[in-house]
Image (tube, rainbow, N blue to C red; front, top):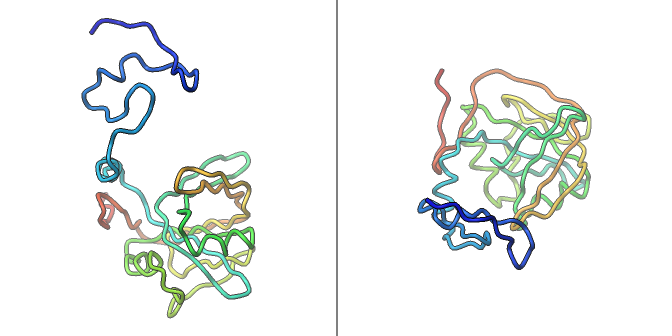
Length: 190
């Protein structure tokens, strides 16, 4: 391949990758403008294995929560975590309003719990054991780990939000993680 000088995107003024347009495996052109379909995007990113969490909170109406696989550790100093709720989530606005949440990392035995919290059912906590963390957010029974947080910042990120939480307290349980890979649940084998 011949080398071309780097160019600037006329719309943004940012430097463009001169090799991007020649990459036959890329679905993104020089300007970063999307030319791919969402099904292909989901297929490719589905090859990244993630754990499964349930993000919980509690307001005057009671406990609330939703399944979330877009969770990560962000910083050690200060201790921060982050996750990405959808803009269409009906649970997130209630959690955001109280300013605190708990990340419940699910164990391999909790696939059914993950499925329940992935629904719009208004009574997701029916039959689910839990206790309050320091912020008042629910820590679900028998989770692999839990991280209780206060909301630090919230950023708009396309059709999701990026929520950064400042860790208040945390703990671990026992067992192995529930995993998600290529649109299906799985387990870890060492």
